[in-house]
Length: 301
Ligand SMILES: NC(=O)c1ccc[n+]([C@@H]2O[C@H](COP(=O)([O-])OP(=O)(O)OC[C@H]3O[C@@H](n4cnc5c(N)ncnc54)[C@H](O)[C@@H]3O)[C@@H](O)[C@H]2O)c1
Image (cartoon, rainbow, N blue to C red; front, side, top):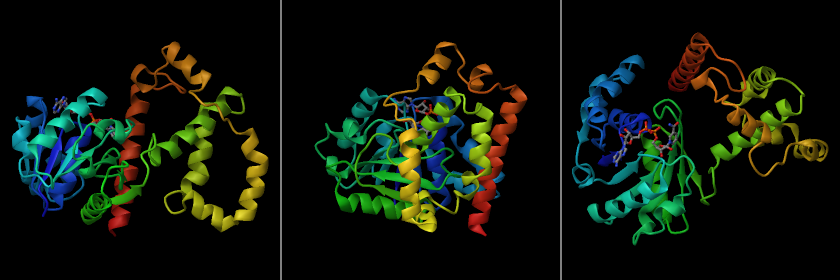
């Protein structure tokens, strides 16, 4: 069993700790917030109860007020702290001195290039990215991102560890912005916004089309499997016609910029692309959670 350390006991950090604790690992979690540490085991225990899993595994998670106590003797450190480049660089510089050269150091940044976080390290061969998705205990994917310095064996060990605790790891060979998942997701969002901006349909219709068509098949049929299914020749013919018409704006859509300027910031203020009552927001969140739980239950069956 590897000894796991997690830095940051927030939304992602407590979920990452939960995954390893459930799989039998001892996990030490550091946070500067006493409240986050005080509620850590309770949050994990509640998640496990809701999922019908062994809630006693929360006892394998130990909160540490001192960073050094959390990472001493750790085999792997996952950083899930603030999304701030300066803060992350300083943290990894400290981690490098507080851990042995055998310890793997991983950042869970959403979008900051891993290379920018790790390039000041003397031992960058043991540093990489692990991009988990929210909630970490319900979404299977973890992208394992290599920098040009990451030792291949270190990345492979991380990949194998994640697979052993039940995740679906994906190796990202080059440290590109957005890694793989967010590049694909935001390519779709760009065209979704363009369709609304061009008056082809309204925002609700975009979402209906996705959810009621290829979205239905996505859990079992990836885009490249789909291309092979219909034939690469047909895919080529479609691309010759459709790709020249698809939005290729290099930056954010002016439509999105305008929404933000108008203060239409989404659910937090009741309106974004769509209007949201508090009840509708709650219902959507509940539907997503129920769907993810049902998918996990189906995977386990
Ligand atoms: N929320 C998501 O959907 C998501 C998905 C993938 C990646 N990420 C990334 O994961 C990281 C964490 O995100 P989150 O959503 O869990 O944030 P969060 O705000 O819920 O948690 C961050 C935690 O870090 C703690 N913290 C602040 N300063 C600290 C310090 N000096 N030392 C130790 N801990 C400190 C905070 O007290 C907080 O508990 C970010 O880099 C984020 O971009 C988030």
